Length: 352
Length: 244
Image 1: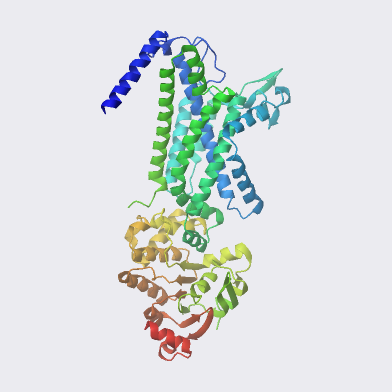
Image 2 (image 1 turned 30 degrees about the vertical axis):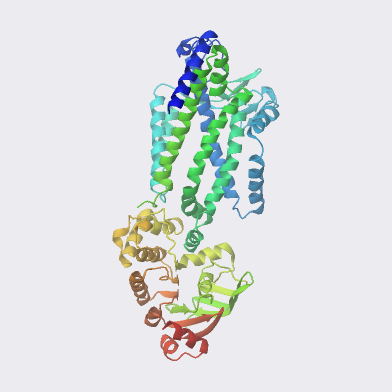
C-alpha cells in the first residue's frame, strides 16, 4: 500500500516537472481557444473560428453517428445472414456461410481501406454518377440522398411522430403476438409532410445541390464496420437459434405455424437469451473499432480530438484522458441499455 | 363403418441403422380412442409422431382425413391444423404467457382476431380447470398445470384428433391424476384420440382399443377387456406381468 502511494505520487510529481520544463501547459483552458482548422463532415455548425471544445463535440457526434448507423445495419445484416444459414435453399445457406468466413477473417483496417480506396474513391465523377431512381446518387464525392426539410411548426410534429413510433415499438415488444396498427403513425407522417418538404439532390454543372451528402469516408467506414460486425453477429444469431430446444420447434410445427411465424414468434424470441449478451460485445467492439476512422481521415473523435487537436496543443494527458473517458462512457451506456433490454425482453418469462 | 380418420399402411421408419417402425398397419375411426403401449424403444412415440408429420417415413403411407402426409408442406400443414398434439415435456413457449401460448396459433394460423382467440383460450382454460392462470408464464406453474395448459393449447386449434405422446411421464406422481382426469373428460366428450401411455389405469378406463407395439411391429390389437384379461401373444403377457 505504501509502495503504491509512493510510486503514484512520484509518477505525478515527475510528470508535472517534465511538463513545466518543456513549457507544455496543463489544465483544460485549451478547450476555449480557437480551433483554427476546418472539419469536412460535421453535424453541427463548425468553422475555423469555432472553439476546440466545439471540435470535440463535432468529433464525438461523428463517432456516435457512424456507430449508430453501423450498429443498426450490422444488426439487420447479421440477423439476415444468421437466419439464412438455416435456409432450406442450399445456395442461400452456402452464400451466408461464405460471407461469414470471408468477412470475419480479413482484418478490419484492410476492409476499410478496400471500401475507401478500391471502391468509393474509384467511383466516377458526379456527372457519371450511379443513379438510383433519380433520388439517390453515388459518385466519388459521396452518396447523395434526399433530405427532409422541416418548415415552421414541423419540428414538434416530427418529435411527436418519433415518440409515437418508439411507443408503438415498445408495445409490440410487450404484446408479442398482436398485429400492430401503425395507422396513427402514418397519419402523423402525412401531417409532418404538410409542414415539411423533401429536398432531392439535382446535378448542376459539376456537382449536386440540394439533398444531403454522405462523404466517401463516412460511407466506406459504415459499410466496412457494418459488414464486418455483421459476420460476427450472424454467427451469434446462428448459435442463438441452435440453442432453442428441439421440442419448441416441434411444438410450433404441431400447431401448424408457418416457417416464418415459427422463427418470429417462437425461435428468435428464445434465441435472444443467448444472442443479446453476445450482441452487446459486438456493439461495443463496433463502437470502439469506429476509431479506425482516423486511417481514412474521417473526422471522428479520435481523428479530430486525439489527432488534430493533440498535434496543435500537445496536451496529451488531458486529451487522451478525455478521449478514453468518452469511449468508456459510451461503452458503459451501450452495455446498460442492452442489459435493460435483456431484462425486460429477452429474459421474459424466465424470472418468476 | 365410416372411412377411418387416420390410416397407417405398411409404414417403415429407420433412424440410421435402427428400424423404429417395421410394417405398421393401423386405422383409427372417428370418435375412437386408441391407447398405444409397449416397452421403451418399441416405436410407439415414433408411430404417433408420424401421424402429424413430425417424423417422415421411409416407406408406406399415412393419410389423415383423406390427406396423404407425403403430399408436401401444404398437406402436412393442413393435417396439423386438424390434429392437436401433447408432448411428454409439455413444450410450452416459456417466453409467452399462458394466454399468449394459447392464442398464438389460432391468431397466426387460423386467422382469428385477438378477441376471438382470447375467448377461445378462456373457454379451454376453463375446460382444463385453470382459468385463473392465464396471465402467468409457464415456468411459474407446476408440471401438472403446464401439461394441462399444453392440452388447452392444442384444443384451441379445435382439432378433430388429439395425439398424446406419454403426457404423464414427465410428471411428479401427485400431478398425474389431474392430467389424466382432463384426458378422460376429453375422451368422454367423444374426441378422437391416440394416446401413448404407460398408465394402464387410463388405458383400461378410456380406450376403445389397445395397440401393443414391440420392436416396431404391432404385436396385439385388442379391446381393454381382452388385452388385460386374455392377451393372446406371449410378448404381451410378459409385458403385462412386468408392469401390473
